[in-house]
Amino acid sequence: MDVSKLSKLYIDTTDDLIFLTTVEGDEPPFTFRFAAVNPAYLRHTGYIESGFLNRTLQQTLPDDVIDFVQERFTEAVTQRRSIKYEEPVVFQGVDLIVETTLTPFYDENGRPDTLLGVTRDITERKRSERRVRESEERYRTLVQLSPDSILIHDEGKIVFCNEAYARLVLADRPESLTGSDFYAFLPDVRRGMNARIQRMRQTAAADIPPFETKLVRTNGETIDVEGTCAFVEHNGRKLMQVVLRDVTKRSLEKERLQKLSQLDGLTNVANRRYFDAALQRETKRAKRTRRPLSLLLFDIDNFKKFNDRYGHLEGDDCLRRVTEAAAAVLQRPADVLARYGGEEFAVLLPDTDASGAAVVAERLRETVASLAIPHAASDAAPYVTISVGASHTAHPASADALPLIDRADRALYRAKRSGKNRVELLFEPLDAAERPIS
Image (cartoon, rainbow, N blue to C red; front, side, top):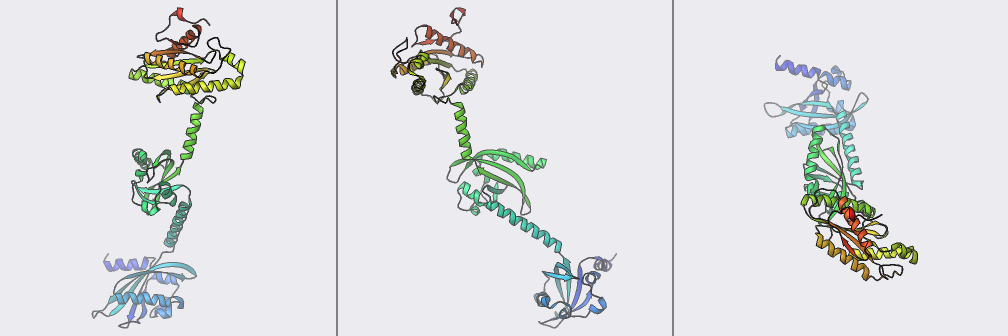
């Protein structure tokens, strides 16, 4: 098939409206007269070819569009190049939007001769573009009004963020963050986030499970944030959208509640639950590092008699004063003071040998005695005293904490039997003869 036959086949079968007009005149205003049209032109406009050809634009087009079309035709001829324009039209009662391309031709003397036009129905395309545009406008409006911080990044480079995100990181305006490193604000997630994004691309997952991390503001301040991620279309590309929320207050409250759950309500020192966990942790660490570990158990001598004589309110105050005094003796952050039960307390001393445990135990006894809290019902002294039992392991062979507790407990009983207000040390397993009588 030669080119001329192929061209004719296209002209006859295409749904585009093709027309050819002659150009009359050497300069504007030109007269444009229809010389030929294809079947699609007649089909869409409803014109009859025999009555349509040789008519001018003015004789063919409605009055409200003739000036606009005349200007476009003239522009193509005078600028001696193809031009393209869009316009709304009504073809047989149907409102359409069309795109027309005009190409001028000239004779051997360079005078305008003809003008070829191709008109294409772009109504559906314009509707789709409008829907996309309206969708993007709604998205931007929702994003800008959102109280959450929202950004879109391309391989770690921020391409868009809302006002909330700028406020979150303490930036002057969102535009100032464009092109900046997203991970500079979230340094702890750089490696993990990249791995998650790769998995998302490989598995076609829609989003990343929520995560919590630290965000570093422009002034160096660090806050807690919760984030979610998902792929979104942005400027024709699939990029990562991140939504962040400041959860610093929630984190602080969570931390506060966690601390409260670990504290004894009366004395405000660690409770039994926290102590048991700390003891297991430190015993395992001592086994791993081959470092010494010591444990003290002490209780207030004749405390039931104190309550009976002075009342439970005074008894509670006594417990608080003894606890405060004991806490003041312990200087290291790793040391743990806990209420073990009733008037009994425990002290965990990591990295402490036998002599060190003995020194701390005696200092606890002396400090409580120095409070001089009256205790007329005591058979140990006329003031409140404590008895202390200490145990120690130099090189624990296992992570079992029970032997350490057992020895401290037995040492405490020995101190009680020996007259109270004293320290007893027990650093080796007891034989049967040493066991206290229940």
